[in-house]
Image (cartoon, rainbow, N blue to C red; front, side, top):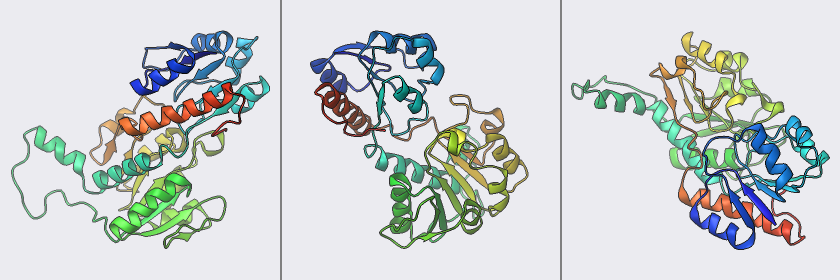
Length: 316
């Protein structure tokens, strides 16, 4: 079967793919154009896309006579794929949950510590030659140990972040989740996002992206947060209303933010870049060789299962 892979992947993943399929590998690291996506649907049996490859309803409509039968997404998030449109055109969709959980939770902890302890600001000071030596009131940040973390979305990743905060830093955990959850550690589920925002020192976003969660975090959430609190987003950029976030930072409604994702990624607003109280990472959530390899292998598990006429391992 002909397989189209939209971006370079770890060598071991590509080697396995080539052993089982007739592979065409796109070597460009940027998102596919609409024409490229249309061609992938018309000319290949299987497609392995990833974040930024926007398979919208229009792409399926323009493609017309679609040959592809599976989009094996490289990533747990699949809000860049119109799953309903795919199904309507006879195209199944899979993703790679589980493989990304620990790495994404680790990135959340990186952002929590960097932002609360002003690590990015401090490094910039040292690199610029502006550090004049230690003194007792220099760059005082928020002491994370013993504080309260609020988790929005207590799925696999949210729970992994909360566990790190509780067991590693003695933090109290409060959370909002659409359905009842009982994590295996002390945690209080609250009735609304605003309730969590009011109660916590650090608010972490861990819900899936998509139409249902676009701008889920906006002006109302920032107004509820405490002035010393921080926002951390390792989920999807469009979940947070960036204009409202910038306004909240300007008004000193919150103390800062740590972001790995952005509403109009890869564009990052100049107003955020200019701020010292915001930590900015280039979507590093799953960026380790081990994790990216595991993601690719799970995508191939789905592809091979489909080719063998078996159920998908992780269908959407």
